[in-house]
Length: 291
Ligand code: FAD
Image 1 (spheres, rainbow, N blue to C red):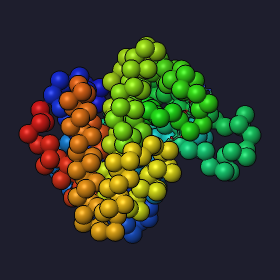
Image 2 (cartoon, protein in one colour):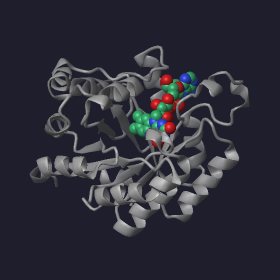
Image 3 (spheres, rainbow, N blue to C red):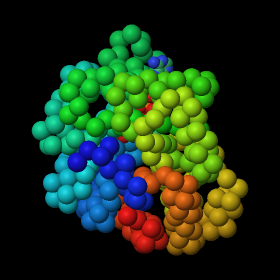
Image 4 (cartoon, rainbow, N blue to C red):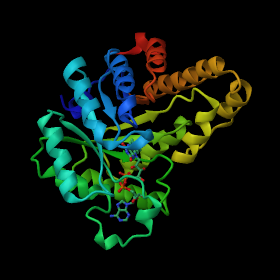
């Protein structure tokens, strides 16, 4: 099932992101956690590529397991910047052979090593280069792209970032998924700017439940997202009590999701961080709202 076919449904729906294991030894526990999340029957699941501490070699295994065993549509992420064309085409063929129809085409972050290397020697400089190549598979894949409601950290302006985003959509992205944000108004303003710039594909809001105090610093430093005072106060008050913080974080994410639905967006992607209990609690909180 192509994700683009799910996104025009006018009833609220939810999907979850998981990440692959870091090592062989954690493979079974990650597989189990991702299966538990898939059993909640979200609209689809995405599996990151190397991000969140996992390694790229397991993306296919986890995505294939969710797709084949639990029958949940799967979106496999693929980053290109540190790879050769040969490796990328090998990965695409593997996804193709596993009947994975949805690929999130990403550049990937620039490591210090890449930053110091000669960019003319890279096979891929931007996500758009990968999107062009995926389009050579004659619409076999539904292609997604990343977007940044608070601007990508490397961009010098919103205008420049949105112009490059439009290039990705024009190259063949059928939908965009956003970086996490904790203040919904920032997302709504961003979508308005995209529409004004002629970006008309569905834009899926990405929601990260903050369920521990230690997660705050990591999430904010990775994403550069603005942290509203309301969320800061929650962390200050409950950060030292793991169960209370988890409950408060789930409720904060739930409120964001309800507000998003109420504002006319019917699909939300939740960064579940491989935590079935968090995914389940959020789903329970909104169960009567889903289509
Ligand atoms: P691009 O779209 O290539 O953009 C990167 C920067 O280059 C932006 O500033 C953009 O404005 C600029 N740019 C684009 N085109 C041009 C051009 N032609 N000329 C000049 N500038 C240009 N990382 C992982 O490693 N694995 C994952 O699985 C993963 N999943 C993600 C999922 C989502 C939803 C998001 C939001 C991010 C994810 N990331 C992942 C992180 C992502 O790889 C980084 O944010 C990365 O720095 C940018 O990737 P991109 O695909 O957005 O890049």
